[in-house]
Length: 269
Image (cartoon, rainbow, N blue to C red; front, side, top):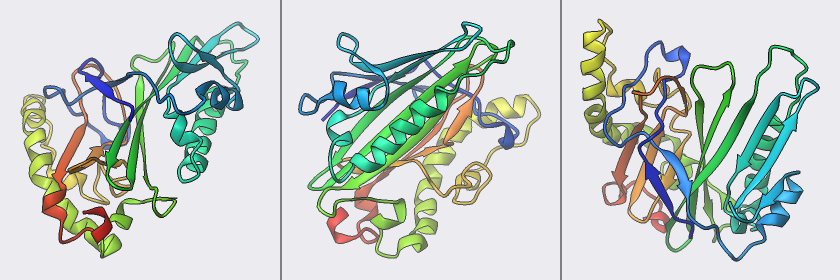
């Protein structure tokens, strides 16, 4: 399993549609700094298929895109190569990585364009006997942008069934379980909002509520699109996209699987 350290050095603003931003609260904000990748796969082969060049020393797949005006976009992608080559997870992860490379490889001839880059990191989680979750953090910037943008994307795979799972797939009642999940997540979300709302009060802004992060809420329109299952927790990450000044943060709702036992499918308890 790939291990990852979280460092409290990157924080960001909520997406503009939210109309406000979350301030940093302790160690919630983070970038992804991976340890050594799995040795059971051939990451250089995967990288070549993506159109990049594998850096043996730095252990990432890199690519530099240069336009006619010599403006550069530097791409770096780290990923669990063994899962990328696996039958259960390979198709979804390969598509995600190819889309990442293609998205940031587009060349513009706009003379106003400046140097930029995109960096992809990951964390991997295991829930024996069959579940594996991967959380990707894509941090990208352009030279004329004041702050970087961070996008989170997650995948959860069931090796026994050979397929990817959406969040409702974990529960006996499917989509109907999300309302109960929101109820369990609210206390954690609200506690993380307390320091945020203190700052907002000083700026004469209305407080954010835990309900804003419920499925379909202002800050969670996609019904918990980013989640992972660890050995003993379900973790929900919100918002999915954030960009802005240092001093803002994301919400992480850690829900013990023991509290979900009666809701989960037997194989995921």
